[in-house]
Image (cartoon, one colour):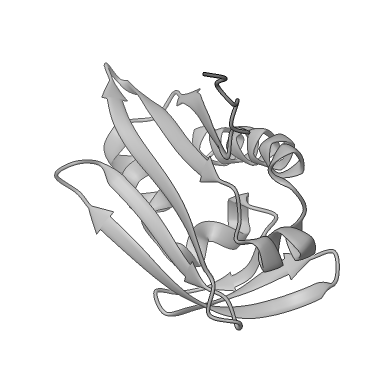
Length: 139
């Protein structure tokens, strides 16, 4: 029986941030802060967001799901065509510092055509995590 290799449809990245985990969690858990450290959003709140794509801006519904107990901040994004995109993150205590990890899933196909393939998004995420680190460490 031949095994087929499935294309990886996710990416997991993390970064160490030399700031107390509570401060990182409070910042990341507020959707209105997304435009400060991501390139994907120009506006965001707990219901709506404006995404930047190579084809222009896209208004979407967005829910931010936060668990302070678990240190998780997740996003569920509903595109205008009804397709759903998700992203998951966790803030973990590491002594007096923090580990912020992010699971990037391949976008729904229509969004992939707008935003770019997962391989492109992985590079953007790496830059965004550095931006988040720099923003929080200099606050």
